[in-house]
Image (cartoon, rainbow, N blue to C red; front, side, top):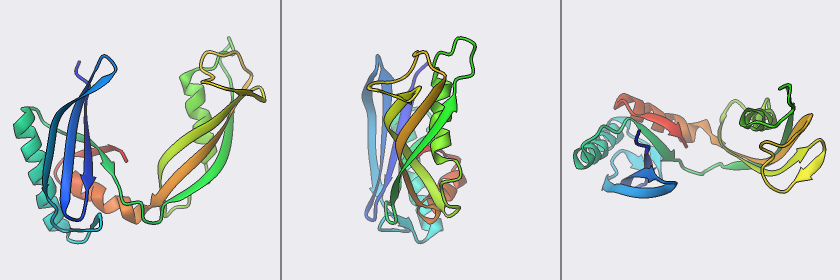
Length: 181
């Protein structure tokens, strides 16, 4: 099965769409398309109807060039109001073997943001800076290590929802799903 990734950058003057395929752990660029931005100012949607037309145009061009539909995209969003803070979270290792799994790592990262993001903010990224297994610092990934408890220290990045929501709504109108931002 092909692993196709599309990324969208919405600028004041130009909207850019890059589509790539991951083959043997390398990204091969399949298409780079741009179109004039309409209904957008400084990366923000100011006229949804015009923005939807511009977005529909770029996806149509991309689909024509590739010969396949583009239904999912990673979107770069305006960083105005970006907020970063340090946080930590932990989880207990519940499997009988007491071996850290990828699900344990995800649970510790989720714990690092649980109830720590304001309602008007959107989570953009969680960047782990340090893992602790049974309160001992681990230099690399804790995956497959034996542990009772996994703790993570991370940088949490958020932006105001007003930076994200209008873009998502415009893309939904043309049946494109935002899978990451």
